[in-house]
Amino acid sequence: MASERGTLYVGITNNLLRRVLEHKFGEIKGFTQRYKCKKLVYYEEGSDVCGALEREKQVKRWRRSKKELLIRSINPTWKDLSDELFD
Image 1: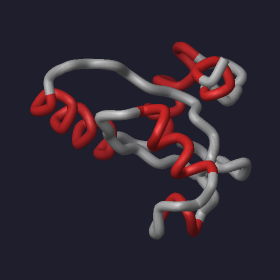
Image 2: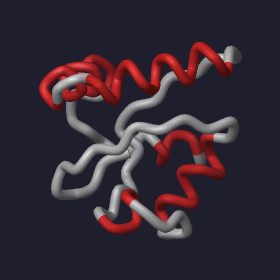
Image 3: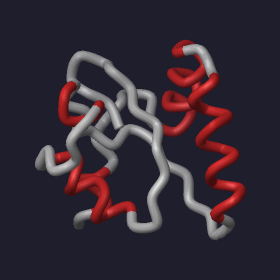
């Protein structure tokens, strides 16, 4: 998730649609609510919970520049990908 100002949030969920809506409407107290991270700019899908947790930890350790490269690899304009999910 990203804010309009460019703050990035990395997290995992077992229900992407639900979690995106929670962030968009500010229902989750904490970082994403405080920094208004409401825009889905990147996501990965998988079925292995342990693998997802490891990937989350890996990406969280990265420098911002590497996270930006990852986002741009599938979303060069940083558009809100949730628009496509809710169609």
